[in-house]
Image 1 (cartoon, rainbow, N blue to C red):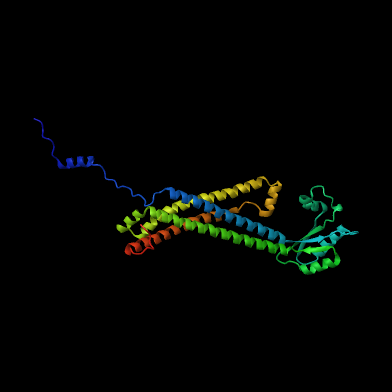
Image 2 (tube, one colour):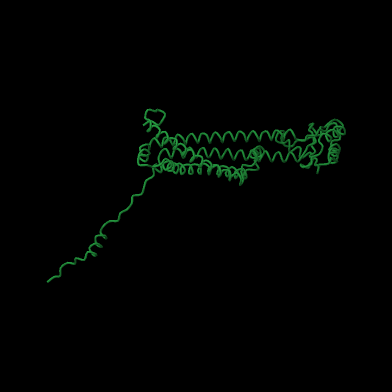
Length: 337
């Protein structure tokens, strides 16, 4: 006879548990989809604005450094200009002017600009092979001064005028004042452009957040109905816009840094050409340096934080309007259905 089947309850329960499928918790989906048309368009807009902001910041930094270099170079030197005249010993006058200037306290050294150097200075305008003897071209004496203890320019100018009537002294103070004014004006213009870019970005984020809320209004209302706090909903939107702003600002800042790096490399490779020489003389080098790149990175972080903060405030304000309209349906200043 065959033995009856085993009726051990422990074995039977173990077999049932082995056959029963494991329960898995469905992962929660975010309130906003991770990527949609609005998010992509907003990221492109933030990239463009970040590029413009970093480009403006780098340009202002470059112009300021160039103006400071000009101011430093000009403030270290003064120029004595001697005009030619009939039966006038130019070389003797140049030497006399240099020696008179060096007698003043605050002067360091003097250099007479020879005819060859003067011809090179005039070559861009009058062409090569210039003979200074055929033209009434003034000659120059460059005096290096002590910036911390400059000489008495008025006394030096009066002494030179008495000794050499054809000599005039230029201490470059007028040019320094113009450079300082230009630098301040450039900084003000750059700051204004940055403010306009940030303002446009804030308005763009406000409209984008309201559009996202309008498209997901039913989700927000359900969350409110089940008891979700406004801070939770705002945090979800904040995370969404933080990712978009970080990507957009990173792309725009990287493009701006690449632009300055490429411009600096191109300038270093074409230093001998007249175009590059003129651009370098006017704007300086296109390299923004370590501080410039640090400023670009800081601008990227500021744009991301500003976008995130603006999105959170907009969400909180919109949810407040929804709650106000729900509590008092007769009001029309809330968000319409």
